[in-house]
Structures are given as structure tokens and as C-alpha cells.
Image (cartoon, helix red, strand yellow):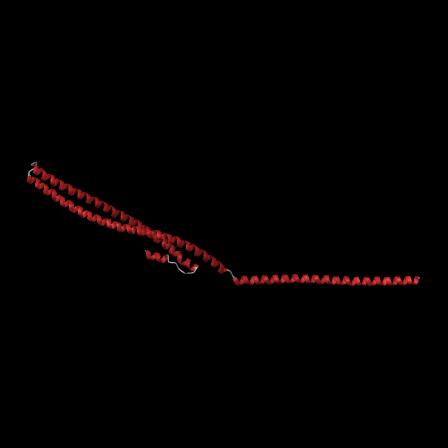
Length: 236
């Protein structure tokens, strides 16, 4: 399982659109893998609880057998004490004391067996606890990696859309359109300049005409003055 996630979360060097194609399915795969791991975790927790319960039960049984062995040993001593004090016949006391000591041995044997089994269950529980802790840590790590993976996917997807949009633009057509607009603007500017030159030319001609007429009027006045002086001389 760890190998799967190592492959899923390995950083690649592909382009943005290629990265999206590679990450779409792994996201679903990793989500399912995490769900499976959580199921494994629940099963491991149940197994851990059962092993701990067995260990607790065996520890209690071992303790019960220990106390039972001590109780039978105490009873054997009391029987012997009664025989010594004359409260019981020695033969009867010895018989019952032997039975008590037999039960002591049985209880001690069961105590040792239960204690050994309890220790084995405790060792197994410790191992399972370590596995559970490791599984919890991996799940947390994979969930964090999944968050990062989703963020990378969103970024790559946005980048891909932008690149696709830019790629769909007809750069040649746009350039040609701009060139035509530029030519049209230059034509309009040249036409405006031509009309301006024509207007200036018309004004210059009008000025020349006015100047010519002004010179004619001066000459006419001069002629009139000369004629007037001539008449004045005749009159004298």
C-alpha cells in the first residue's frame, strides 16, 4: 500500500495539461486507498481490543490461580497444625494436607501457564499497537498528500484552460487585422493631410488675386491723379 502512495505522490516534471491527465485518476485511486486503509485501521483496532481483552482475562486467571495456590498452601499448614495440636488425627491431617498440596501444584501450574499466555498476548498487543499507530500516521500523511494533490490538480487544470484559450487565438489573423487597421489609419491621416494642403493652396491663390487687384486699383488711382493734374494745367 505504501508503494502505491509513493508512486501517486511523486512529483513529476510534466507540463500542466499533461499533469492534469495524470492526476485525475490517481486522486480517485488515492481516495479509495485511504478509505481501504481506514477499514484496515478499524479491523486492526478491533483485533487490538480483542487481544488486549484476552491478555486482561489471562492476567486475571493467572492471579486467581496464584491466590488459589496460596490458599491451598495455607490450608495444608492449618491441617498440619491441627494434627500437632491433637485436634485431628495425624493420618487424616496428612491425607488432607497432601490433597491441598496437590491442588497447590495444580494452581501454580495453571498460574504459570496463564501468566505465560498473558505475557504472549501482551507482546502481541504491543506489536498490534505499534502497527495501529503506524497505520494512523500513514493515513494522516496520505490525507495531507491528497490535499496537496488536489491543490496541484486545480492549479494545473486552471493553467491548462488558460493555455488552451491562448492556443485557440489566431495570432496570424489578429496580426493581419491589426496591420489592415494600421494601413487604414495611415490612409485616413494622409487624406486629411491632403485636404489640409488643398485648403492652404486655395487660400494662397485668393491672396494672390487680392494682391493683384490691389495693385490694379493703385495704378488706376495714379492715372486719375495724373488726369486731374493735366486738367488743372489746361484750366490755367
